[in-house]
Image 1 (cartoon, rainbow, N blue to C red):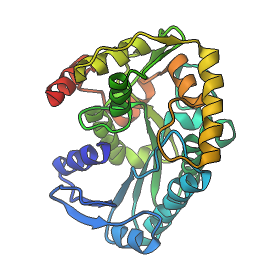
Image 2 (cartoon, rainbow, N blue to C red):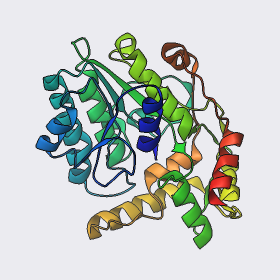
Image 3 (cartoon, rainbow, N blue to C red):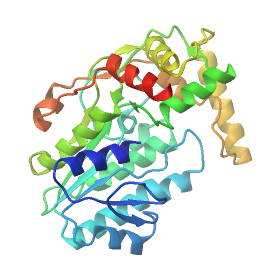
Image 4 (cartoon, rainbow, N blue to C red):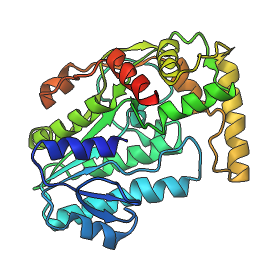
Length: 310
């Protein structure tokens, strides 16, 4: 979803776009199919390019560390090394606020340093290590920056929206704690515009990490209800105490790891923490540095999502 929106946005901005992904994109751009863990494919993709926006990642609430490391760290290493060798001058790494999340609330924070040791999931740890790898290249001929979109959603979303709707329809969606924790999110068009702005501003923000969001924090309950309403389903109001969700998440993680299961677990410690603690970020510096502001509000985004479902 986000990769498609970014490609279309920078294409509209006048850039010649090449896309690299594992399956056909359906976009009217030069296209290379392959995996970022394949060095030969990556070298072919970056040849003659001036800039790279790196969105590819393994995103899952569960799985083996090796699988996350191979794609998120190894793939990023392949891509940034090939980019430098090919003479790429701008490299935008799409990271995640979870790289600096230790389970505590983030209330009006800016982009804290990535800390793999304190992260709460294999995904977050691998993204943190990859971000450090990218930003370590700052100060050279290739400008590098990390942009951390927070909870991106919109039409066609298979991560946040699809998971919420699947659980709502099956009756397995639960509110953790009171559901009153404030969380921010990012409508997909705003995230794409911000990444396009990061591409334009890359030399000025070399070596920096920036969190982007709509800047409209809402209670978890309100956001989940909005997503369910847009999909035409009622939000189940069953609640689970935070302590029970965290304990259950730890147990589920152990079972999934022992069985090497690949399906989405019903709960993890990281998910319990994310649904029960506040996560919203100060956007003033980000908007100043990128010369960017969101153009689609949360309410307008929900209306567009409802139109898409209809």
